[in-house]
Length: 106
Image 1 (tube, one colour):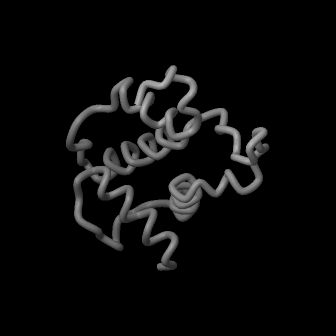
Image 2 (cartoon, rainbow, N blue to C red):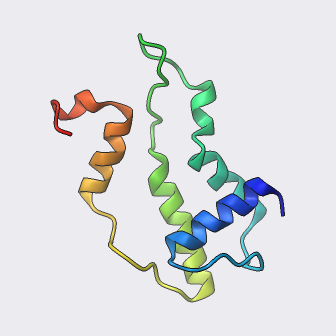
């Protein structure tokens, strides 16, 4: 297994609270997508703001990563462990892209 796919698989299994298992049945295309989302590969070709920073994507990557982790969990018969996704998580993710959206709230 290539290092990029191994990294993506480890992230998915970690999101489920599971130890790394190279034998987990995950589609290669999903692992490639996860790797791209986690490494913000889309920023490379993104339009830039006035300061040269990449503009935020239409859809933040966290939601898609969570969807793929949940799908893997269903296939493995495991429910996601830990705290459920909340609005605060979305605010914190969005702050990464543009803190001015929150009037200086940090």
